[in-house]
Image (cartoon, rainbow, N blue to C red; front, side):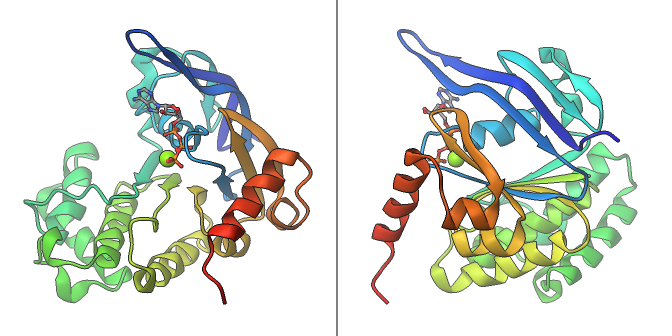
Length: 252
Ligand SMILES: Nc1ncnc2c1ncn2[C@@H]1O[C@H](COP(=O)(O)OP(=O)(O)OP(=O)(O)O)[C@@H](O)[C@H]1O
Ligand SMILES: [Mg+2]
């Protein structure tokens, strides 16, 4: 059986005038269909870059990516990766000049060649699923952060992805809005969707994912069951990362 996602020795460097940043350094990653994995690690460790290469938003410098057994290596392949994947971003990235309904209907109409009428009726269903029926006609600036992220989740589901990539989906939200988005993501996870989630919410990581990978300086330094990664970290770097998170938590 093929993996849903397989990264083989993937490296990605960003070159600017005087500097080269090795954002991903020989990353190996295997994700089974229907598996939910979380990626954790300090800022700048390569988590977003990893998701972006899987989504074809970023080309890789070396290595190979397979999505359901299909291999992608060249720059020309990058856009094909997006056929099976959809991504949810920290800052929602909705189109501000389109209503919630239009945001959800746009990509299926353009990408899947679904008629506008069909795309709109599917969007209505999806907005119902994420609990936003009464907000269909609103523009993103008229919605709370949690509502905007739920529209973004509906939009991601609208292209019928096989793999959902979530890049810190709750870190731009006010604390009281975090739970509504996490609950929605948990309910999507329960449908058997393959999901890769970058998160700083360790309790959510424990709830939603059996497997967790810890990134540091572009490498996956430690992988394993989420419970063990979070409660019995082996490497020094993971131990110090987890204790730095505890220090940043408020008392009580
Ligand atoms: N487009 C880019 N151009 C140049 N450097 C980049 C680019 N995107 C990312 N980088 C660099 O690659 C490294 C990994 O960045 P990445 O955004 O993947 O980290 P991250 O783990 O997602 O961090 P955070 O938790 O802050 O979101 C960083 O050093 C970053 O500065
Ligand atoms: Mg990031």
